[in-house]
Length: 595
Ligand code: OXD
Ligand code: MN
Image (tube, rainbow, N blue to C red; front, side, top):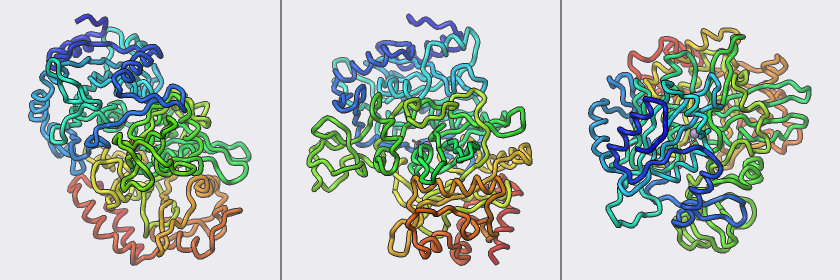
């Protein structure tokens, strides 16, 4: 093995993986621009990356049609006892799972190069950051990791001879026999895909998929599943949250972290440009927040990522102009359509549909075609630093102090536009009961209602009952310095199926109300579910929304809320004796208030 690494653990891990997976070559990544260029050139030559004439240094990739989203049914939290993984996670005992996966890994990189990718989640060297090393046989993964994380030889320097890191092993699971021609998107069939986490030893093993969170292991696997388990042990929080800074016309800054399930508009809110005069919004992160209590007792958040892996369909100058401006150059697109003029296109983009395009499967497409041109979970991978509204402090190693936490989801009915929790513990109840209609970000049916507590159902690396308790514990530690908690629903529809709230930049009106609540300047009324804005306290100036629509948007129908009780009961009962007493208390108080 001709790889120059000084770290003992890394050296022996690389040797072990090479012996197991038997790649033809091993390459140690350094994260440089030249390396990126070189990898892309080779991907272009192989016909895998399609350069886009309209966007400098930008490329389109098409995945295999069977490999288009995260595979939650094949995702495992492998702890020594099933109770540790809890009812929201798939579980196989570590010995059994490792045996199955070792059989799959044996010889799985034949005919391929094994890339060793040293990366940092969070700024390199920051005390909050974590170092991971991903070993992967996918060059697509390497170029995406270059954007989504900080890949650098400096990471290895920081590791020294005995520093620790999180090993992340990935293979597309498609070894090549001598002379066998490769496919453009090698992957394994669904029954051989495994996205496995071993939180007791901070270890990730992924096999069979090359797509997104299944393969870019710094993101969901490390920064959420493994990090959430570490955070519980160490007394901090790893959350599926965007982070933004809102500045009032008087120059007061508010930092907001918000948890919504996948494909529910986190990227849009993170880059939102307020429609209300004088308010400014800057983006810090669009998907993950790591939060620790700082020396002053407040909760400080960093975005551990380096880029955005955003859902393309629906992104446009009217829904998210700042994302569109982020996508002008240096971007990787996956499963978007290709226009005849050499640009990408997706459903919901501004302007007319193209008269002809090549769809995400590589086939001719016209507006008459029965299927969409872009896959519903088509993505862009773009450097965060090139977002026009990236906050200048987004890489501050100590993070930014959070004032407001928001939960939400996609609900066509029942849930009003906004309400505030009575206190932290009630806020934990709101997070724990959050529900949303499912989206295309995961393989499976779209539009079904599911409880997705804290938008973490697919991402919590331990028993979610304990996770709820961890939230209560954090609240106790934070005391009066805790952020205030709110719940929002941008997606409520009228009887005739139309969205009641315009959303996007007008969501700033809701955020403004939250800021004014903190400052004691906006009134609220008590309802059984929480505190809703006093009539007139939500700034609707210049907004064309009828009084009736506003009434419907904010309405709370006790009968509809009572109808939620059996489902919450069922949801809570799955946690058995791990359900915190405080949550039981919140639930009975909620029922009592609805009587
Ligand atoms: C994501 C997801 O990719 O949540 O961020 O699925
Ligand atoms: Mn996400």
